[in-house]
Image (cartoon, rainbow, N blue to C red):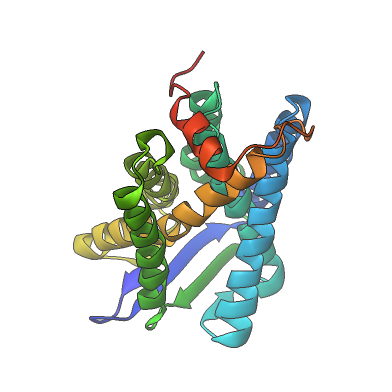
Length: 263
């Protein structure tokens, strides 16, 4: 992102087309691994995340708000790739942690290593490939994002304050850390790879971009996603087999009792 004033922020990325093709290969490999490991719910949720990102990015940011612009590429197809890329990886990351998957660290490392290395690899193999510059202005919609985040977290906070059974309270710190870390890993990798930072000269703008996006843009949906996970997994196992249905709050208690460690 590039700051142009007190409220206006421009989210901009500059990359070559080799980056797109390499990332598509990684996404195909990641989805294949999830299928082989029979993590069907995780895979379906990741794909749903990609569709959701496309609806928001193309349908709302572009068609409704006219905040998207591109140089050197086709806006629809580039946004489709971007939406599926970060939708799948972000939602897979979140789902694996919310499910307290026994290999969540391993899956997370695979995504994070790719995010860090992909820009450097694309420069090595696609030095002469066409360059794409895509950006969007934010206007005031970051305020609406903040409103969604406040609504989700405050609802969960009120629930916890009045829930006498400690085992059935939302693990708010855990949810917050997961919600921030996925976007932080993404933003840090873009900054490190000179994709996000290419047009940003001021160090403060770079840090502000990293902080604002990491704290808000994915984290705003953390509480609703946790509720979706608890509701879905109270009926279905990861391999899409039905389980004995339990209450939503009992599922939260189950998750709270599951240790967070690789095993």
